[in-house]
Image (cartoon, rainbow, N blue to C red; front, side, top):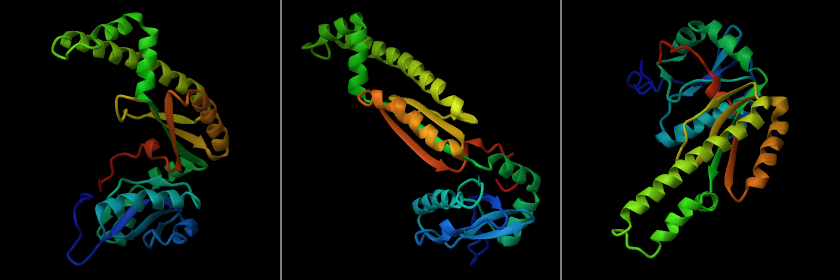
Length: 255
């Protein structure tokens, strides 16, 4: 059944957030009145984190999916499953997921035990990086000076050439600055995953799989990198969160 399909008429089905240890504490989830009524469906040593199928707006369901999984991290390692997974009932969750993929899921829980994901997003401040590019390239600076005061039509070719030159320089600078970030932070992580840039000013978009006991060390390292670059770059560090980027679960039958 596709995650977008509805269950039988009158039955909201069972929404599945992820996999945790059997008997995992849900205190952090239950203590949040804004989250759905979440419970465990257990099978042996693993359990599915579930609630009744959603009946609210899609945006709220997306937000709750992440919030539930992040809260569950307090009581167990978490294998996050894809957003929007609704099965017909609890038996289907037990049979198709917990029993059908037990060994793989149990292995993932073992691998993720004591580990969390932190995601780092770094962006240039456009005006600053362009100014630095122009100051470091006399030819581009001269070209910009030459077109100032000219009409767009009269200087069209020069403007195109200037734009292409700035874009090329920025791409090279992003590559260099991004690699420097990775070289400094990668030794602290068990694994990294590179994500696609969100826009042309994004320097780095990287997920780090970290031991929980290295979180403070990682935060300090990011701050040490970010502080001298505050005028040039904006740093956004997200987490700790479940290891969304480090789940190599084979395509399941319910996907």
